[in-house]
Amino acid sequence: MFTYINPEIRERLIRDGKLFRIDGSGAPVEMSESPGPGQHLNLMGPIPLPLARGVRQPTVRWFACVRSTELSEVEHLASTLREQGGQHLFSHLASSMAVNSVLVIGNPEESESPLVRVHSSCLTGDVLGSRRCECGPQLEAALDRIADDPAGGYLIYMAGHEGRGIGLWAKAATYLLQDAGENTYQANRSLGLPDDSRDFSDAAALLKFFGAGKPIRLLTNNPKKIDDLTALGVAPIEQVKHVCGVDDYNLRYLKAKRDWGHQLGEDDLSTQDPSPEN
Image (cartoon, rainbow, N blue to C red; front, side):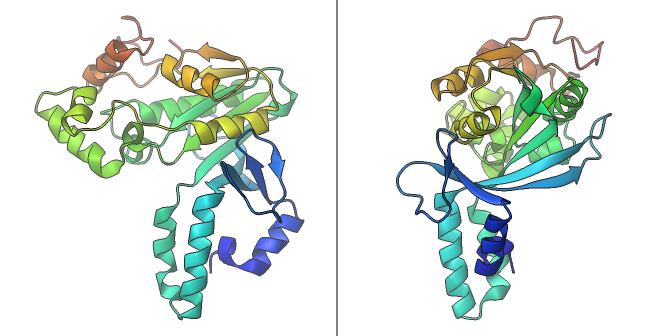
């Protein structure tokens, strides 16, 4: 049985401070209260998580994060299934939730300006190791760069951002359109989808909570990500260029990102130097 729908386990986690809630401004909210209107996030953790990724392979403190509205719907369905003896269907409940993650690396609470990566999920790049994008190398390089920072920082992994928010199924279709000659943005438009439909409101709430209002240094080449987070009230953001994983397989894709607005120079798009800190 899943712990997040077992009332006894839920209460124990709350007592132990391992399950808690924040609102959209990053302020703590009592778990006994109804979430009410507006965005609320439930967080579970910290959970020690030794990683076999990157060069440094840090042990991080992992927090799993889910919107209260989504969790409430799943808990209601779980209660119904339990009453009907349908526990064997519990695995279907997970598909309706986007569970984001916060990896706390080092002691960023001691930093005046923690180093942060807000990373959009990419199954093909992060898990399968596809070289059609640079997502996998960016993820591993971010872990290393944050681990190497004197005070560490945060990596926020956004589970609902596959394909810049269009989902894995539509992303597969865009790949076929790209193979027929379209670039990554043209392919989205051909499907009647936005160039970028990602919602960073959860990331903003998490940054406000963990960052406690401090300025952050954000590993990104995308000015729109900074604009979106700033508009959502995140403290002053300093952009830190994060170029890695450039090769002949993803060069056309990266050039399309540059033309769309990503801050990538000709030197950044060289396939001769794989250094993650160019």
